[in-house]
Image (cartoon, rainbow, N blue to C red; front, side, top):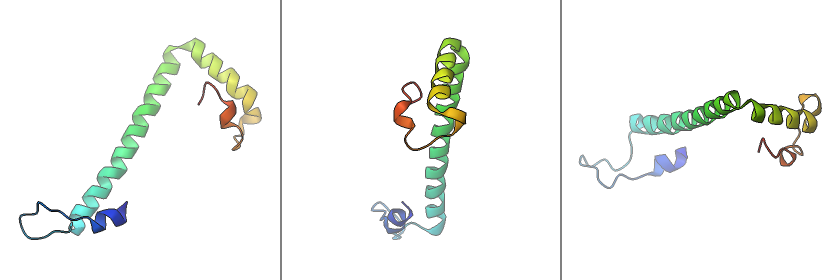
Length: 86
């Protein structure tokens, strides 16, 4: 992603500078980083909220994870077996 930003050209530049400055590059990289974190955090918060407000779903998910993940250990073969958690 950073190499794409470094090579980006601003066709609408009014000051003759067609490539992004170091400050603009840093700002764009920060925007992508924070945007990715924020959407992940929002999705996780909603998932936890829904589990907290639906005890039957929470119980079913707990039973499934206990059955599929003995001892709480995750291995690459497990995710396909997690129907509710997927």
